[in-house]
Length: 326
Image (cartoon, rainbow, N blue to C red):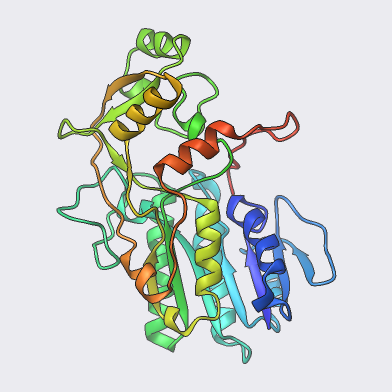
């Protein structure tokens, strides 16, 4: 078996590759990775093809002999390259894969931006049958198109595809700094959209964390997942007949409740919270289908997510970084 990887130098890819190579079930598989902006060293089981997935020659060379594809590459809010890389890239991969005599399975890592995460309302849990409602921006749009394109290739050509839809993926101390009011904040949202500059500065100086309030007046519930749980979900879906032409939500069993988060940090670390009113919606990404069909269970809940983030000691040569494009 031969696994083709895109996005191997990203957050999920860097955690998935060593887990895959160490897994006894895949010990006879080899790997080929397409690398563009960043690359990784080749090893005995790993070969690298340098170039863009928007280049048909690169994709053609990489797909040769590949039995499985794990497509993780993504472009964030970069309109100048999103069509070439995100849309053209997956089209070229799917076109080459469906025509390959070796093709067995195509896995796409999707995102809950395709269902709008906290920006779009849903009357109940967000399941795999909920309508796609992207929030504004090219990144969410490309994730909707990617999911739809793979599903259409499944319908048109009988391709064995699988979508693993994940919310915001956390690792190391990401969650701690996602809750920062300072310049070291990781990700979003921009507090300036909800607070005055004076409130932000005061909250940062006092070491507070945000207790976001949804538009209904309750503590926000927002979906997260730890990268370790994403990796185990990929390993569970890979070469698994139960994943054939399926879409799975891959998330924590419950969304993070910002009220419960604030209580836990107050009780365990004497960290106080600042109430932040937002126009966001509380949503619940339901992972029941993945637990039922894949036998997958996320291990990181809110308490463990906090403990892992606050106990992580980041080395000076390991900066927290968001890559745009990914």
